[in-house]
Image (tube, rainbow, N blue to C red; front, side):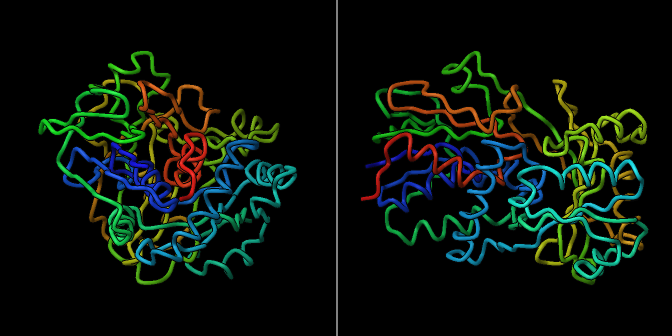
Length: 376
């Protein structure tokens, strides 16, 4: 079987991985020299803790298994089973954490409520003031800026993988066949369009009523911290945005403990992960209204930096990068991904939202199973 994958981000690359792993030939086409979308611009978090129950959690847990397996094969991914801590400071925040522990799937997520002293034993860099912390053992991380590069190196070693950069696929020209802007036609047994937040052009022609929206976020990265941040870190505002934390206790938190105005205006939460070079990736905001601004705003950065410093108990290192990114999210946010046959032999896979990095291995595995990419 020959599979054509359009899109060089993590979702596309994981589809290529599934096909090659099963013994098939893959041509992966990327319109930029390298993928430049959300796959590179995020935290690299394999984020099980906040996922909704049922299909979403099952997908995240399966993806977590696959990430660990792939990470053992491809050390350059920088896979680390670092877990996450969400420190809490108020009785209302603590009540939400306790409600999460009462979920029937809490054990599958690796939830545990720790005292502040216990949390600091796991992550000594958290010297700031907090009362307790929700620990999620199943969370993990990879290096987002280099993950696709190392995955492609491993794929090339198979002898059954070709990466074509700087080519935009413009049209479907037959069953499982597409033509790029160089005039070249690529024919296979299946085409997967994994184009991320690029929803115009060919995607709009093939799926004009696509139930997917684009979301913009702002993030930043610091110089090396000078010590290990042994876990990912979130703040209690993340409870407001992740479905796993829905409960009567969260309703009370939302009603009685308002976010700071800047955080509420930009739908903010703290997420913080240390990169392999020691720098911290910190964010983020959420913007849903189109058209998106072309510039970034400073107030959200100041807010999230202050929250990070309050947990670390020290000033952040110098900020060396600030950026914005855009990802695609199903308008029905309970859906893990939008998977649709849009032409003969052509499937569109998009819309995982903030779950793309976490769930991509399992999303691709499901596509491969549904399309019959059997092991040769």
